[in-house]
Length: 343
Image (cartoon, rainbow, N blue to C red):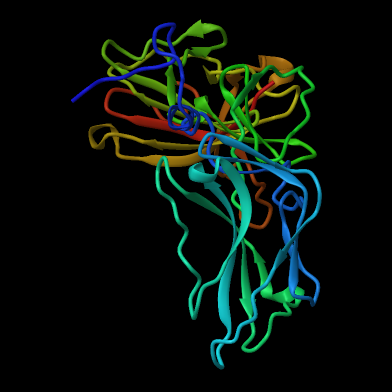
C-alpha cells in the first residue's frame, strides 16, 4: 500500500481531492451561524411555488460556499397521486461541476436520502419540504428547518479576558474551568478539578497542639469541585492510639479557606469499636472563621441533654474533645462530610 503526505515543498496540493481530504478534517460540515436561530441559509415558504433561501455561508467537505443574496428555488408540482410528497432542499458539492449549489431534491412517501460520496457528490440538508397531492404551492408550516451547523473551536482564556460569549463555543479559563457561551454570557459548565476527587492530609489540633492519633492511623481528606467555588469535602479518621485528654475542643483543617465570615456546616458520624463501648453519635461540625480562621473546622458539636427535667429542659449541645463526651481511641471511626464555599 502506497503512503502519501502533503503539503510539502516536493508534494504540494495539486488537486481538489487533496484539498478536500485535508480540509474536511479541519472543520466539520455545516452552515456558519452565531446561533441556530439565525437565518443563515434558512429555507422558508410563503404559500407559493418557490422557496426562499436566505443569505449565508457554509463549509462542505473542505469547500467554502457563500450565498450573498436571497435565492429562489422552484417546487415541482406533486402530480404523483393522492399522497403528499416528501422532498429535501440540500446544499450540494459537485466536483464534476466544480461548484457548490443549493438544489431541490424530490422524494416520495419518505424523504430522499442524502448523497454523500467521499471525493464525489456530497449533500448537506437545509430543509425538509412536504408538498400536498396535486400541489406545488407550499405553506410555511410544511417546511422544516434541518440545517447542520459548523462547530466552533475550543478557546483558551483567563478570568479577566472580555471575549464575547459566542453561542455554542467552549472556553477554558486558566487551564481548568470550562464555560459554554450562550450569546449573552459565559456559563460555567465544569472543571478539570471536578472530574475526580483529590486528597489532602487533614491536620488535627486542640487549642493549637497537634493531636497524635497513633502510628498507622487512617487520616484522609478528600475534596471535589462541584460548581463555581463550591466544593464537596470528606474527612475520615481512624485512630490507632489514644491521645491525651486535651482541655480544648478538637479542630481539623480544610483544604481551602472558606468564604469570608460565613459559617460552614458539616455532618459528623462517630462510632466506637465494640471493645471501646460501641457507642455512637451523629453531630454537626462547623467553622468559626472570625475567631479560629477560615481554613479549619473549629468545633464538632453533639446534641446532649442538660439533665434538667423534661418540663424545663433546654436544648443543648457540647463540643467534642479527645476524651469527652467519648474517649476517642484505637478502632473508632470519625467521618465528616459536607460542602464548602471557598474564598
